[in-house]
Image (cartoon, rainbow, N blue to C red):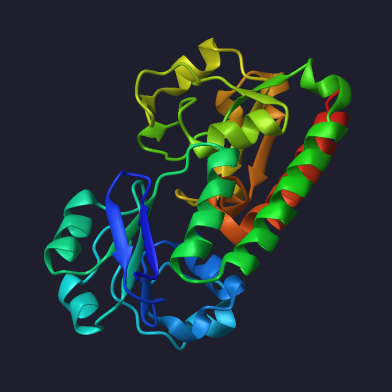
Length: 277
């Protein structure tokens, strides 16, 4: 009897004869989550962007980046499973691993709720269902607290421009996890209705949509105070006082990062919102 039979978020069938003893993770947030599950000793390969938990990932072999993993190095590690993500990793790399006979579990979360489901499913895949359930429950509790605490702000939503890249400017539409995080926190993403999930935009297009705030995350583009200072003179005076630097991991990372990350982001934006009225 197989240890597990399931399908991943892209519909690919996954069958494992036994609990994975050798895991390669190509997703930084899932790497952190695997360690939180207690699966650290089974992890034999990571990307160079897998930086948490810092004291544990340093000793694990690196197999390249999320977009350019060393396929041969991964194959040589003889993993029982590779953990991937449809947005962070390239389809051609995932297909090469499957062609080499390596099972790949690919996630594709585009809402907070689906990210919670992915935590549970990942726990099943690596044989840590109880640990996954505990983390998922913590996330659900935190989301409930945040949404309950919104009060009037759930109706009086501020509009936000939250770019993820610069030169060219890029944003995200409603079919993304980051959008759902902002929605859950009581904000309206001005590019929600864009035709592409990650549209290229101009600053003039953003300003025409009348944002109340500009949020600058430090991931995937590493927006800094220097970027904020350069941007402010290009904005209307009121908006220039509402440019906020945020932690990109709190906005984009799934898994074990979600409960503390969403809590921090909610607290920060609540302070910013309160100071603006």
